[in-house]
Image (cartoon, rainbow, N blue to C red; front, side, top):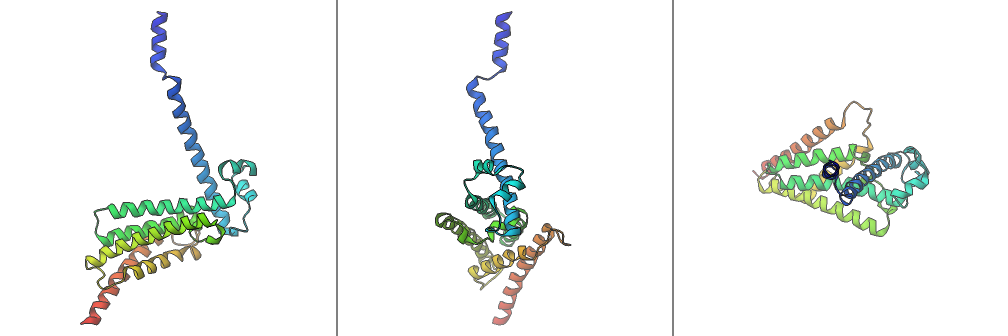
Length: 227
């Protein structure tokens, strides 16, 4: 009976070596969640006070933690800023990859990309990292952020080019159209107020609709001028 009990206990519990990875995975998830919470708090302070105006002490206090504990997750304020950039750009690049792989019509791909872009701008870290002065970053971090921004811009150009090739915006310049879209969306955080009458979802849908309609109207106008 004792042997049977021991075998049963042994069958019910994985070897110690197998338990460690699960514990480590849980710890990693908790640490990742804590880092994201810190980024949200930091982004809010950066938006209100500016990068140079916000202090590490204030970021730590907003998370109800000590300054020393914050350094467990980030070595300094510049590392927090860089992580904010990376987090926001991760969301944008994930959406871009999904849209480029989608079997949707080019204008629908662009609509969904613009909508996701607006949501990232307004809802992910308040879009703060996308508009802070890049000069606050170290040269290496600045180059990394600029390179990823350029990849997103080029990806949007490819989706716009699909629309041009499909005859949706004939005669248009993909580079200029991409700049126009990026400029319009990038300006939203400068006037958006979370307590205002329009939600981020309404603004995303409205801007996507306006921008897509504008591209098509511009193409129609160009065709009319050629007649």
